[in-house]
Amino acid sequence: MTSSLSNMKCSACRRDSPHVSESEIADMKPSIPDWNLIDESSVPKLDKEFKFKDFETALIFTNAIGSLAEEQGHHPKITTEWGKVSVCWWTHKIRNLHKNDFIMAAKTDVLYTKLENS
Image (cartoon, helix red, strand yellow):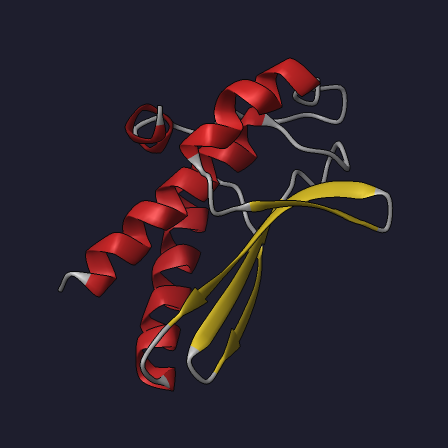
C-alpha cells in the first residue's frame, strides 16, 4: 500500500471532514512503518525524523517537501537542523488525522528515498 498511498492525491478537507478511524489507521500504518503516531496537545499526528549527511541536503529535502505541500494543498510542520529534518503531518482543520496525512507521509518517504539515491 505504500506505493498506492504515495500515488494518491490529497482531497480538499473541510472542518466537518471525518478523521480516520482506528481500523483505517491500522490498514494504512503498515505502509508507513517508520512514522510514529504521536499525541501533541490532544491532537494525533504522524511524526518522523530523517537523517542527512549535512545541512545543505537537509535543506534540499525541506524545500522538496515544501513544493510537494504546495502542490497537494496540505502542509506539515517541518523542523530543519544540521543533519536532520523532522516532519509532522496532521490535518489542522479537523485537529486530527485524515487520509491526506498518510498520503503525504508516504509521499515524503518517496522524496527521501529519491534524494538518498541521487
